Length: 87
Image (cartoon, rainbow, N blue to C red; front, side, top):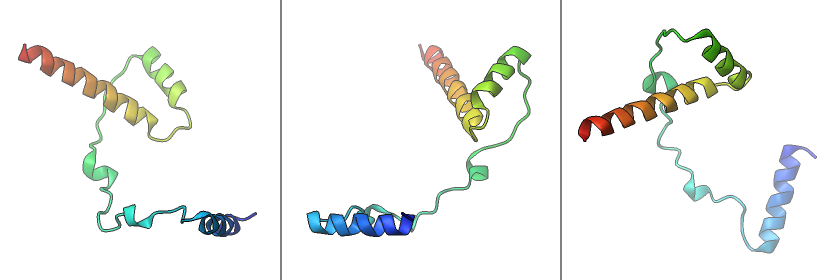
């Protein structure tokens, strides 16, 4: 069954059961998603070879995961540092 046929079938079923599956009123098309380049900067850093090899293994084939991990680690570190400085 093609995606189009599946969608049509699901819509027919949903109409018989009392309502649409999709609620389009929640979709906001007026606010475009910011471009990645507008919210992130590229930088060059040095990592220990063993750490980088493990990170590369974890993120192999998972686009953007390395960026997410490194941003989360940096965010946690900076948040903890600010907390300690405020004490």
